[in-house]
Image (cartoon, helix red, strand yellow):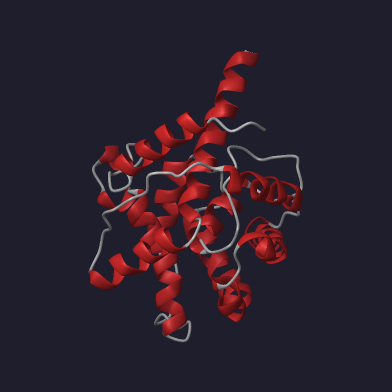
Length: 227
């Protein structure tokens, strides 16, 4: 696949402008919790906080169901008939059983070296949430925000490629990306701002986010052409 560097930069600029803007698909675009900055902070930040508290949360699920609903609406996800309440319970079990014991390993899982763990967790998450051997788009989207260190990209649609094939393809494209604009402002208190700033500036999460948006745009163009 040949990269369109100019379009990638334009998409990066657009995503930067939208970074702290409420998403129009949730609450008519009037809820600040639906911005991408807020979603990343609440999903990833919830696990960082839980890890620092021994994965305890006073009997509540580690990820609030409200943010699952926001992610579903903003990303157009299919939860396979599950309510957000049921998904929150299943996700909580997966986090405690699979993510918590590997949290230190996840934090260091970058690039090609992190591919085996990313594939394992994608497959395990789909089984835990949807009782399916097929990796659903919702699984990818959830792990993309919950574990942003993992070398994952959300997919524009459920793909027939295996998880490993898709991840290998993404890793081939990432080094070819041009220098991309990235967010400079971050929501939350000083500690929360520092958490997300460190992620954006110290990892390739934002580059993967822009690449995913570009690929989604290409997929939409192909669908429109095929009609």
